[in-house]
Image 1 (tube, one colour):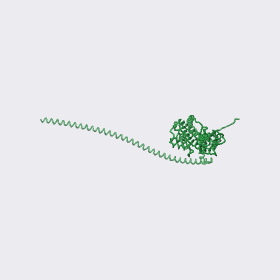
Image 2 (cartoon, helix red, strand yellow; image 1 turned 90 degrees about the vertical axis):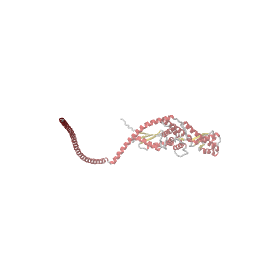
Image 3 (tube, helix red, strand yellow; image 1 turned 60 degrees about the vertical axis):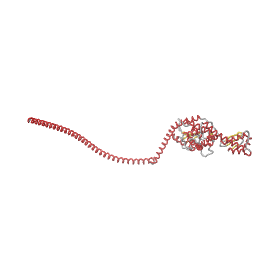
Image 4 (tube, one colour; image 1 turned 30 degrees about the vertical axis):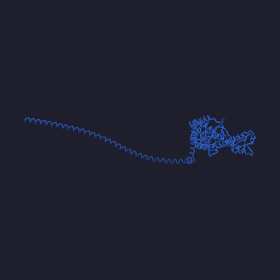
Length: 485
């Protein structure tokens, strides 16, 4: 038993020694492992520190280089500033020298030319003004030629088509009417005892009855065609009836006036019907009928108004404008001439006011008021009415003027042209519808001739009243003649 215990103890001792030895070996291995790991970490850290130190050294080196470069740049900048300062001083000296030389040169030029600087500037400006004026005239002429080429082509086409489609008879009225008598004995009955019949007839109708040596005829004279027509019809009825005395005269005149009022209304209605115009106020229709007995320079106003209506409609159709409105405005444009004896103001404004009261459209009212520029035309219809009115009023033979007025207008046209510098001779031709101006070629060039035409045109528009338009033609010719011997 003791031996077994001893053996167990020995075994336990050996096991303990073996375990201790193993533990010691494991501990040494762990320590060695950790030492190796520490050495590796330390080497790694040392490597990182070395890398950072190299990088820091590079940065320091770069910074030193930059500092050196900055110092060098500052030095260069200081040198540049010093150089600029010297250059600026030299430049200022040169400026002073140039200024002095310029002043001396100006004084020398003034002494040589005998002109001061202001006088020389003025002469130069005058020369430039002349050149600019010439160039501007050339530019104006070129632009006008380009714009008018297209506008005139289209306008001629439209107006030509309108005139071709419109053919109205020419009516020439006078201020007298002749009543034929069955025999000369009727003159005594017309005069009556102590002239009472003729005085009653003149008082009732407002016309002058001229009984002269003309065989079998008496003459009725009055500026109002309506009164003259009433007097003519009344006298013809009295002659047909045979009873001529003051009471009968007043009765017949009153009856004729009533019938004439009805006739005027029928004329207005027929006119509106012929033109295809609807919904017109009765007052406007009656006033239109009165235009049959109104004339202007011998032109019947109703026929003129119908012609203008047709022209407006045709031109509006070519331009794509409302033809009914254009026709309506053209027909009513001279409406005020039927009332011009009764109201104050121009016939355009009188007619526009009547049309406004009769609920015509604003476009028609404006066209009536603007057809003689009492108002500035703002619509195409207003411009068309102006154009159609000018066409109808200015066509050859449509109006009649006295010889005295005709000669005065021709002389006035020529005197206006002669008032301009450079005009050699002026001729009014084509019944005053063209002014031909001959200019001195040495005083005016081509561009100044174009400006002269514009200036003459403006002066004519300001100082003369005339139907239609007047063409101004400036002629300039230079001839060089030599003889070979």
